[in-house]
Image (cartoon, one colour):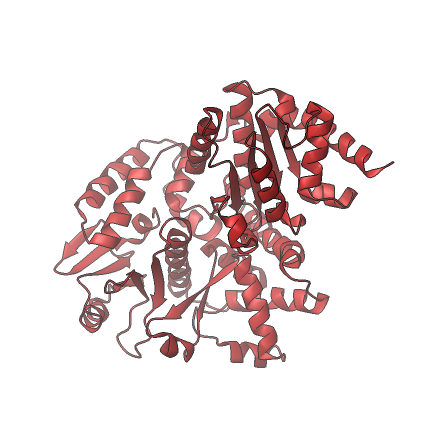
Length: 482
């Protein structure tokens, strides 16, 4: 069978099977899956496209496995079918890893064959609105160039390309001008609440952002009170829901899991797929280095952030420090882990080690639990998970919305706080995270040292947002709505 025939058969199958499976994919326990906020943003882009505004018609959606990329695409697919009455033949969903296993091709060639077989048209002669959804697009190593050519040759195609978190690193400036990037990050607690209980906590999230960057806390106090009152009126809301979120949450695929061990196995499966598949699309890795990447992740999971240097890792695993740097860099590109640099000048930062955190506290917990947690003190262990979760909230905020902010750790050798968050050239805002004492002395020292207007202490000993002098106190649970 020739390649074109294989592709045509595959396309025809997808055009029939995908719409027939949509309802099952978007339903759990006879209930429709709730939508996350990115749905509304993409829906708005589609509505503009259908009205003739064609500037935002190439969306790239990077994200970790399990964060809900495919589900979101299916929900957009259903919206087009049921609310916009787009013909089935005009919506093509393809998971490109499946095509890649069948025949050697690329996205541009596949789209051209689809247009020829269904519309007897080329990219330039297409006269109907068409929607192309490509999942796992990183399996076409030139996906950005394919998308750019399609974008340039027709204004009749709306595209969504989704794939690994490294997608945003894989296109040049020329392609970037066409692309609207919408990264999907692990769920913060507000998104968790929205998907699990269908309660919109956007107001809470926005007020926490205002608190961080302006020091104004009144809106956050009022929103906190209203949000928790609404949660208390939801019969299905568990009293320990947040504790489960901290250790087992962050991914939509985990929302219906009841057994902690099953959740841990699912999270480990996610990390192994990223190492064995996604990392290979970034850089060809030897089997030994794949094994080493797994071992490094598990080792980091048992440590507190900042306690292990790259030199330590090289000595521990008996390998070159360059090899350690390469693996850590690739792991960061997948967004399984991320780093936090010390605050200071570029030269000062270069002299100190980086702190590494996991994408979610649940991944750290899963990996740590799977090999036997070496920290026997429960309070200390939960404090480490909380610090990781707060770091994740700050990292995702910067990655999704506020590229002009940077998060550092405090390099002071004494009375140091956990994080310093800086917006442009403003004085940094000290943030201390704690399970236990509120560490007011450290915060006072940091405010004076960095000439900050205020500082933020995030603590499980705080029941509600309050301000005392130049220090804002925020409960851990409240902050994770960010």
